[in-house]
Length: 633
Image 1 (cartoon, rainbow, N blue to C red):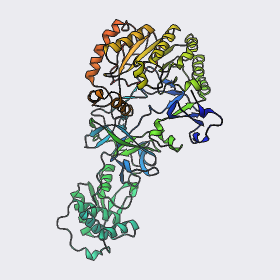
Image 2: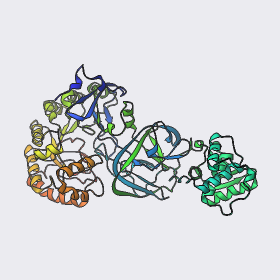
Image 3: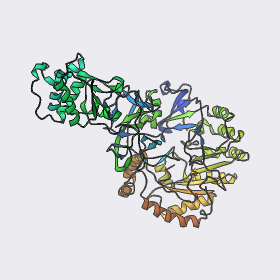
């Protein structure tokens, strides 16, 4: 393997300053689409959230980005700007000020990154009619915390909370559409701004000049009121009057006029637009809380910014935002997302989570989209930091699972050799651990793993999808051959260590025939695997597009079948899962794998402490796992 970038005389343009702790950045022909950024990390031992998991801690010496969550919305989704207006998320720019939240209140924050991706689209519908189109990964704030739009797993193994019918979101609900600015609206605006007393604000005067298409009319020129003013005229009139005589003191929106005719016209316009209000001595005050204040501002579209009507207000939590449905649209769409300083923003009235990690790439002059998914951070001081963390008095020697994010035995480990020190640090501290990998580099550490197993519980898991070497080379270029991985299982077992195998993924029409599965399971049984878990193909966004192109190029005869099997999204059709389970069970019995127990629901295992593949709810590893409960390794 050539690592030209490691040389002292390497091209310094490969080194990208800005990443905290960055030592240098490495390119290699072995990874044509990946850059490795060597960093000195501050923390290596990390807690994994999710109460149903059989482990709470993980170590990831290589932090790749291919598993990073992406929270994405349709491009026309309106986002609440700091001035109180809205703008489609597709049109936002880095540096713009928008509203986020902090401690339950609206605060102004800046857009730090903006990017696009292509993902399967879902439509969320709420009781008040609010609709948002987003990816299944997108998260919304509910009365019970953050929830994803659709089921799935984070970091591959953590079952994530998701929206279901009746779950209540927080926020104001849907934003009103802005005015069209047609002729009726323009005439109404001129009436409101002139009869209200044309102010000196240059932006207001500029709009009035534009709408007048000539000199701004005087009040005496506006004699006859429209006999039947419509909604557009009313919106324009209220916008003009608000620009002329409106206030937003203390978050209260008030329109006033000493002219009784103008005052009455304002009340009639509010009634016409069904905007709740109350008539007071000082004027007409908009009521109904923040939702109605925003509706007034968005419906009418005044020139003067009124963000102070929002800033500092409490985020509403009403009974109107219950989930009615989450519908898979059955298509992929270009979706948009942003990073903000608060980690959230307001999308069509709903508090939306954003991907906080992506912004670190903008500091490197990399974009926050594809670049984020093609860079790998190598924690070159992982052993040193982990050793210190394990010495903490607060460390309770809980199980640590490795491989929960990226493969700790990916090919880069052959160069960086971080795992031996990590294994020693865990064993020396009395910490049980497990590893899941496709990488045969693990064979180098079998003696070390065996030594560690004499002191703490150790588990190993290996992923093997198929035995056909030609097909494997086309599907998984650069990964160890299936026979090499079977040999790894054998060597691990001969060393007296438990080793489970994930048959992942099973590819419809390619690797799911009885003959192919029989040969693979026979090889796994002969290698002495502790247990087997079978997973049908899960096509995540990104993987879906890549595999689709591969299928069109290599097996066009299967394209239509895959369209049908994955018509509803990333998960294969339930009927296929049932057929696969029926095919697998007799083969497991034939090879004696049905008696090799895996995890029970509590996570205990007679034969092994499993890696992150040790999932709750899997009674036996020798079985087909429902893809709605488990994603592809």
